[in-house]
Image 1 (tube, helix red, strand yellow):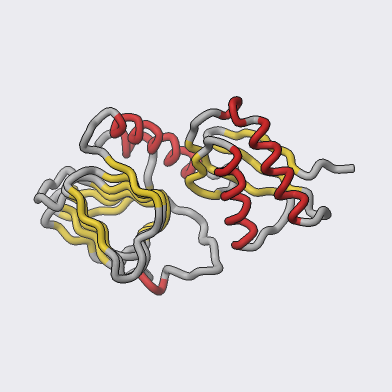
Image 2: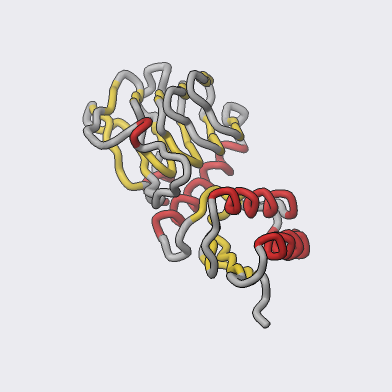
Length: 227
């Protein structure tokens, strides 16, 4: 008989193989048991997660993430395909950035989403574990890293600092500004790109100022660590 859950690792991530024939509640209990049993083995790490072997609904996916969180010290920042090197490079780069920010008092972290009508302003660099939803805004005098989707407005370098950047797992903003420079795009953004019930393929990107204009590029470990 096949096991309910098998956990395997890949570079900077975990592949979770789920039995497709067993009831979901039984599989979920086994997920909790497996991660609780391996809590000390994994330690406190940031990882990407790949779910294999069975299709899951958005609600089931949320329950899996909550079960992992409740039974381990793992911070799952995104769900990816295990061979997606762009995503794993992003996670690696963010690990380095988080370590650097943790050593500086001006760095801060935020868990949760910014919803329509909400705004956040800070004088510090910030790493946000959540989404900036359409109609919301985030402003930092320094840098912004979003471990989720940027679908609203973001302004980095709010003090006029041109060397600031904005990075996000899914970049489809209503508006981006860095220092005194604005980014313009004709691609779907904001509410058109923000659709509950779907899980778009993650395309981590970074926006920064170069030659007096804001440019947006695919995010790599080397690119982020150069800031």
